[in-house]
Length: 309
Length: 309
Image (cartoon, rainbow over all chains, first blue to last red; front, side, top):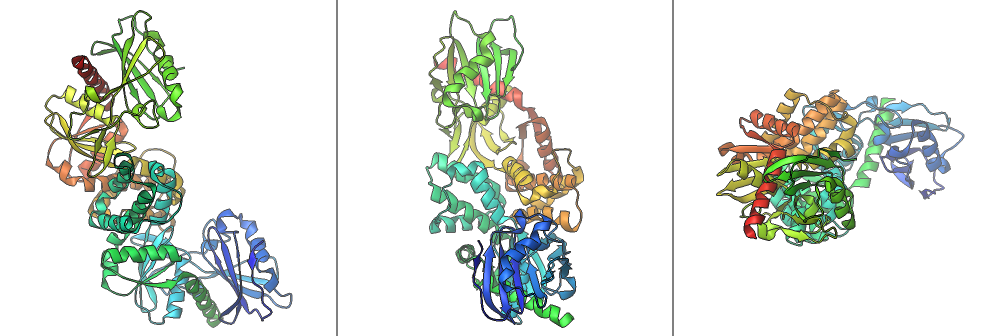
């Protein structure tokens, strides 16, 4: 059963954040969420014909037989393996653009579903899907924002935002590498289960990776070697792995974050770790709530759709 | 059934290269191999009590009831998860040292088995097991060798050899990262099966990684992005992944290989790839046959044991 909060209030439209692992939907009265639901029916586990039923299952209480309700969805639902592939929009561009969103055909007459596009960059080649909506949300929450936006995650994104547009961006495999190395590489012998990280070890690893980022793949093996020759414990190993990967990412982006306003949008714990890493290198950033950005971005997308009508 | 070549010649002792995946043994008349056998009974698939039966199964035709035959084994057989843990010897040191080898207890009276130690380094923490024997072999084949030895593989090693000793060494996770990223990361969607690499794409990737090694984890994601926005094909993706990882490794070791004599010891195809990458960066190296080094190293270990008696 999905976690649901229903509402007696009028529901004007439905906002949906549909990622690889989860779906989150909000019942919206104008720009305000009046109820929310989340379900584990992420895009990663669905065949193409299962998307509409999954959406109906999650949002049923908010639907009405009287008129079709608008649904605006962002995230991996629009990927090639998703409900319907919605092409990327090339930067520089506003983060969300009505004309690039796509309506997907549905059989239930109570729904009209539109999916937000992703963003792409040709040189260097890069893509994002879902983060563009969070950036649009940041611009909704902080109009006129100019600076770097860092969105940590499985694939961390750094986007330069200026004049209401995403000018360029860069993706790092930091989160995915962490998971692969911790669980499936030789380093797994030195790792504990998920747990707290050791701050001093983490900070030192961030600095070492930032000083000699070229040594990354040797520094990684050093985690295993330290477990064998210096009896480093599991918490140490986990903290070093996290610090080395985030430190290498920050080293690559140093010019971008050392200059000015940096906003971190991400899950609390991970965003805090990036903030800590930035501090270890003499930088800083502001954290903005990720879910608030997503919702504000879907609101911005909805406004665009209304204006384009 | 193991692949065997038996011999009517006298067998003085048995040399064994016992890695994670395979076992290779040679029947030796003095310093000369007169027969060889290989079997898929690597250390990775054996419980502790299965090592002796596996060795007997492979070498049975060479054993004699008249007197116990000496066996000298190197590789992961001496690891913590192997037959018996043989402690690492700290560098600087001769690559193989009789007093650090260990006899393992066996129940069959026809065998006396000794396992070669690995090498360790405290700062930066590092370990090797198996490669020390190949380095000893190189010193047996080329007496007085001074220079860098590169041993590509799952965990590539670079060792500085001088005055008959391993002075220091460094390990890179290059091979393991390649396998994890090609088979288990988001990049797998862009990869073909094992196959030929595209030389120009490989060379370019080596150069890009060597110029901006700090960007490695972003360059890796770029492989996926190129598949999505620029229709790069599977062979391109595989070639870039290989080039980026080897290029980053070479960037970290540039001071070491740009100076002087570099010897590459490894499986032919992989060693050739490293040679190609070195050429792309204006360096060079000599290739020495890996199996010849292993065998010569086991011969050197055997000589040490005889002298120590």
